Image (tube, rainbow, N blue to C red):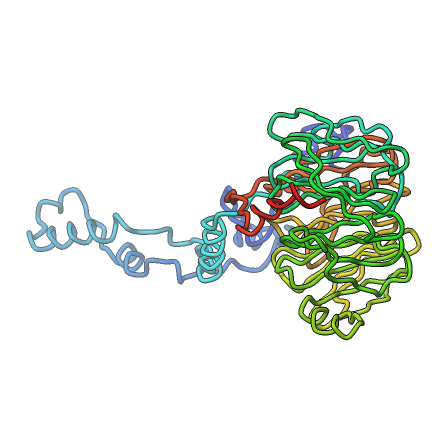
Length: 474
């Protein structure tokens, strides 16, 4: 019958009630047909075989006593001996108070205590372990600032956040500073049309000095606290300087001429080393955390790993030898990021014809993983507090994508920019990421959460005096 039908009266429904399920505890005594009725009426229906009780649940001693006890008249009660009366009293106390039904179903089978005990123990142990709460990743930018005249050029590097919590951004011919502690904005320098636009900016490790690369091939060194030009590096490159990277007192510059030059800013003859390996513009430069290896990417689709000790040993011979020359990418390699928790792990990203993020073992030169992101990879950043990698992209979504390492599973996609996200940089505490896009906006994302133990930024002693001689070096 359809359980949802309303055409049957309640009386009829009670007659056709669903049968009780077998082996379940019932609410009333089971139906037992009378054998004597069937024997007296030969036309009566037979409802089943004889009922055979389960004697394992009977109290046989009590049954025997009740069946064999002689009937006593009221007059014979007084003639019973004291010993018999005591026997009957003890028998009633021990047996009658604990007797069970003579005809009864067997009790329910015992629960499988061993299985249930194990399950309860496992559940208790899981509940006892403190579970780490999943970090909330905001899907929208925490703050958005205007960035008019931002040059829409994939090969430049126009954004950097220094260790003193001051962010620098180049907009056209001007470099602006944004103070992360109070949100104030100031102008550092505006270069003339002959030297502009600004093509790269990079903070020194001490967070008190900044390098500015120009379209005219000049590199300037500034002191933002006094808005004073400390030094101008000339004759390093033949055309624009689109990439900069610091390694203690060494400022490494990469130009459109394909050259990579190490400049010691403490001495007059600053160009101390030149790496020849790229045939086109060098658009990506990153030193490893140890300062022993330099990664460089170029518009020739090449990725080079340079070793400081190897370059020094062969420099005297008039040639430069790279540690690894990697040609797996199919487009320009600009996005580079050294892993903060594994010194020999490097992430690189390819341009529009490649769209891949590749992970490298820089000791062996082996490609550990390659992920097709589906769009141009413009920048890469590692999370300093978790095993995560953040990438920024161009057409079609213009998004930031957070990846879980080493599985490279997408954790989140942050959208808001309407044009390709060309540049990314990270706050000193490792929590906030700033992104600048061709839509002329600068957005701040709280994507990396809050560090468990804030670590104070340490500045090496050699950094403090790197510009002491700038007053007489020009």
